[in-house]
Image (cartoon, rainbow, N blue to C red; front, top):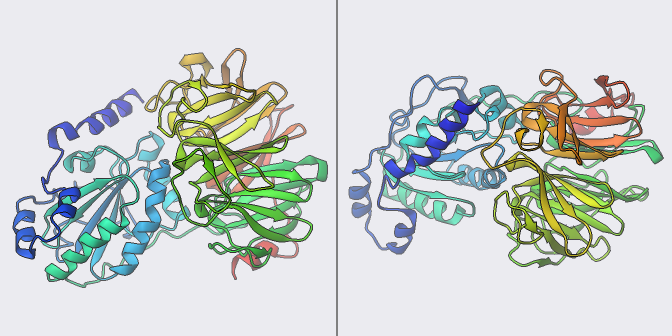
Length: 527
C-alpha cells in the first residue's frame, strides 16, 4: 500500500518536470481564435503525442491495445480520470455528446489513472464501465505511466491530439464542453479525417434482478425495504420477506415526472421517508431530489431541474440546478442532503423545496472547524444519533461528525488526509479506510460501508475504535449503502448486484433474496 501511495504522489508531482507539453494551451487558443489553420498545424507538429506503453489492459476493445499511430487520421481526445471522483463522473455526459457529434472524426480514450489502490484493478474498472455504460476505449494506466508522459496533474484532465499525432493542448476540471467542441470542430475542418471504424467491443453488462444497487432504506414499521436499483434507473419496493411489491420508474434512464410506470430517473442513490406514504429520492445523475407519493403512485420533482449546477450561493430555490446529491436523511422537519459534487452537506425544506448550505466550504479538503468553513471531500452517506450528523466523507476515506445544534462544528472521527487510505482496523489516527460510501447508526455504534475494501466495519464514536465485521471479497464487492432495521443491517452489495443482510446479534451475513412471482422486475426491465 505504501508503495502504491508513493507511486501515486510521484505521478501527481511529475507535472513539475513534464507539464505544459504544449505552450499553446487551451486558454491561449481561446485568445487566438483568429489564428490560421496553417499556424495551428505548424505549432502542433512540434509536440508529438507520446505513444501508449505496451502491455496495458484495455476495455471496450475486445482486449486489443490501441496506439496513437494506429489512430492517425482521427482527432483523439484523452480523458484522464479515476472512477471514484465525482468530478470525473460529471465529464461523462460531455464525452458522450462529443462522441455523438463527431462519430466518424473523433476517438475518445479514457485513460484511467486510479487514485485508490482498488481503482488500479482492471476488473474494478470494468464494473464501473458497465455501470455507467461507457462505450469508448478505456486503458488501465495503473502505474500512471501515461499520466506522467502527458504531464497530467489533476482529475479530470482532457488532452486533444490532432489527426497527425501531435498534442494540441490540455485542460483540467469540469465544464469544458464548449471549448473542446470548438477545438475539435476546427481540427475536423483543418485536417483530412480518416473515417475508418474502430470496431469496438463494449463490455457487456451483467443481467439479473438488480443492477449495481447503490443505497437501501429499511422501513421496519411498515415491513418494507426500498432498494435504489441504480443501474436499472428505478426503485424496487420489497417486503422484509423479499417479496417484490412494486417498482417505481420505467427502468430506462431519463428525467420525467408522472406515475410509477412513466417516471424516469438516472442512476438514483439515497432515500429517506417523510412519512409512511412519502419517499424522497436523491436522483443523482439528474441532479435532482424527487418526491415519491407511495399512496397515489406518482413522482414529482421537489428540487433541481435535471441539469448540474454549481451552487455558488448558500441558498438555492426549488428550480435551481443541484450538484450530484448522493444521500438524504430526514431529521425532524429537515432533510439533510449529501451534495457530493459540491463537497458539502445542504439542508432541504421538503415543503418549499428550498435548500441551504449546512456544512463544507466547497473546497475539497479534510479540515475541521465551523460548519461552513470546514472542508468536506465528496460526502456520500449520512446517518444520525439525534445529536450529531455522521458523514461518509469518501474521497478523504474519512468519517466526519457535524453538530446539529446551533453554532455547530465539523469534526473528524476517522481519516487523516486525501491520500491516506488503506485497510487498517484499530483506534483513532491509526485506522485506514478506502473510499467509504455509506454509514448507518444504531445503539451507539456507527456502521461503515468501507466500499473500496469491500467490507462492513463498526466504529465506536466515543473510543474511535474500528473493527471489521465482514471479511471482504467475495462476500461483498464495493458495498455502497447501509440501513438498520431491527437486529439486521441491510447492505447494498453494489458490484454483486444484490442486497445482503448482516445479523447484528449473531454476526451472520446472508443473502436477501428477492421473490418476484409476477415477474415485475424482468418485465419492466425489458421495456
